[in-house]
Image (cartoon, rainbow, N blue to C red; front, side, top):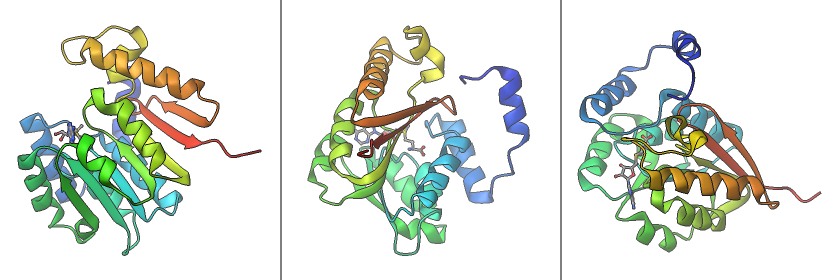
Length: 215
Ligand SMILES: C[S@@+](CC[C@H](N)C(=O)[O-])C[C@H]1O[C@@H](n2cnc3c(N)ncnc32)[C@H](O)[C@@H]1O
């Protein structure tokens, strides 16, 4: 949590009850220690995809399909989420959950290490969500910029890491290596004149990246 408890409690009080499938996935993740995006991050992704008129979305890091489900529900019938996952057990669980929702048919799961599967993708995506191993983030960002529609959007999760990134120090949960990677990435994104970058203190720190429009 990166917000103070009072603000966090207030935001929680505004949450609508989750639908049964979303609630079940949240409970599974909490009970089994599967890291999924906070509900507000998933809701933001869905809203951004809808606002961008997205048809093709790439997700790096599927887990049990929680954020993929939110995004898929925001796409038109002919839309598609391609989601990359290296853990076969999680990918199977995701398949099972996604099969229970009509939007789940829009999610295509690519099993394997994203460092190998991502370079093979030829599609151009409207929105790309990066949410896998933190050490891979710099490489995923390079490939994502290469596969992004001109005015598309890259969303990157965990760029504040419980606030550890702002202090510059890792802890038992966020390793020093992960914190250093996030620090370098934030510096790179904020300093790149070819990109617009907004880092939202929402969820665990959500980075929004877009190519800067020519003026
Ligand atoms: C934070 S979880 C993804 C959560 C998901 N986006 C959500 O919010 O519902 C990160 C996932 O990335 C997967 N992962 C880690 N390294 C990977 C890699 N090199 N290639 C593909 N998937 C990877 C992990 O197995 C894990 O399921």
